[in-house]
Length: 184
Image (cartoon, rainbow, N blue to C red; front, side):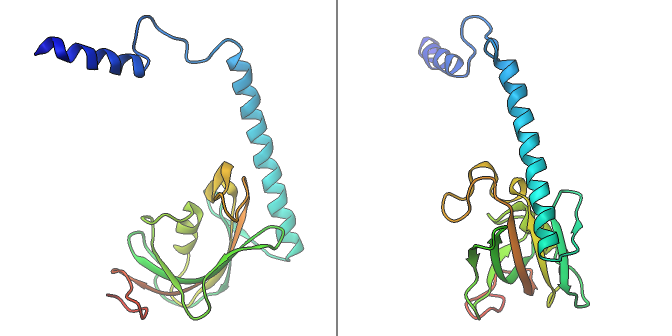
């Protein structure tokens, strides 16, 4: 019985790189390439930051910045508690690129919902919606590393694209919303 376990164990070790001898994880010349790639990424982040500042100036937006790099402007600020992680947020939104092209938008009269800090939407959107209370609206400028990253969304958002959300928080619930917008 034990001799039959040797083959799968050996196969697993080889597949994981644990075969005969240690291997250098960085191939010859790889360190220079890694340094070059790090430098290129730093340059890309600086260029994106410049593009966001130019966008804000062009649109005459006075933006604040969170610790994680999401820029925002509260357009309408209603009194009330802000959204917390784990709650369901129902929003009207339009997402645009810095050149003004609309990427996505909710259908008029049909807001969309997502579970904050749990759903598959941009991490910057999860952060930005937590600045809002029901009735608030805001402009969220989400850098690519907090949006769709290096490859975009493979549909309407190109690689390394900043995404701007014009968003209104309709309501919040601890439970998913039903078809008519009420909690189920």
